[in-house]
Image (cartoon, rainbow, N blue to C red; front, side, top):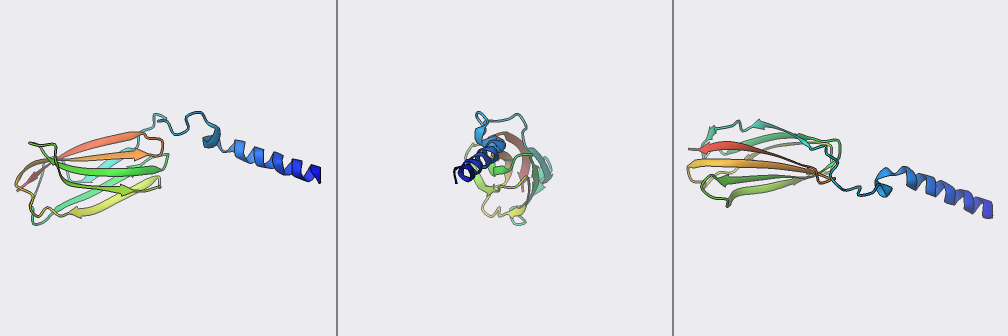
Length: 133
């Protein structure tokens, strides 16, 4: 009976040590591989109307699974968010394709800031300028 228990313990130890992330020192620290962000829409300096909304189409890819992707639209005259939302995901490839409601957004120049964070806290950011008519 002791041999079975000992064998089971050895198997368990081998399985756990094979899980690199459990025993790797600082396993949740940034590893230098930032997520890749591709902004398909809007294009830089794109003009949109408040009635049609702002189509946002972004593809994010990373070797580690994502934690979240944040979208913040701010006026170039202020740091206050006009529109803000986040996409939570635990996948390696995330596609966000949505239209933001721009009703009530005053005409002017805006910046759409997109930031993606993976499970290891690596961060990528992109800014796109948008003109609301």
